[in-house]
Image (cartoon, rainbow, N blue to C red):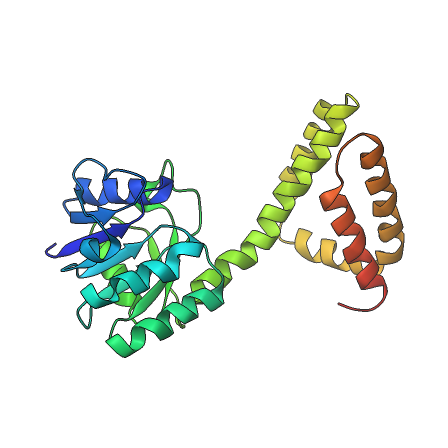
Length: 257
């Protein structure tokens, strides 16, 4: 496919995406102030230099750099150039990017990568939203990308990802904290096996059962988690997740939620 794709940021995700685009035949130019361009990618001296003349720009630096990268590139972009932000940022950030670029005629697409990039590269499952999401998806699919287009503005893809993150990263954090405490008293293997058994039993009814039970037994479970947090502290483990669970149960017990 013709045209240059600019990749801004050569961290773990950006470097792998750039590498796969090159392998699929794309002409790729990019910039990262700290990391050299991967093999096959034409390095540039700034975000604006990388973006100049590109028909698609992939911003894959970091959430805190997303707005700065766009502003630094605006004068180098022609109206109609596609800008895609792949950073894990809040929906409000993606909406602000779209507002910044709109007066210049630059449509911003919000792309959320829904799994770790290592091992998948450009084929990592992605969600895309924004007025030009369909165009960006078509362009990237031409190089083998796995991308689903959502019917909605920039920020919708980020919202979907972060909603899932509250569940998935929260569960992962609780498991890590629980195993750390179990390790401190010699029960890590037992608890690890128990967790694996519970996860294996999960089915479509599990979510509703958890939600119903949590609300119904909020008072008792709040007290239980207070005791658990106290126990972890006695083990020398900071009870971050246990104490958060206590606070949530107490809020539900008061009818707030």
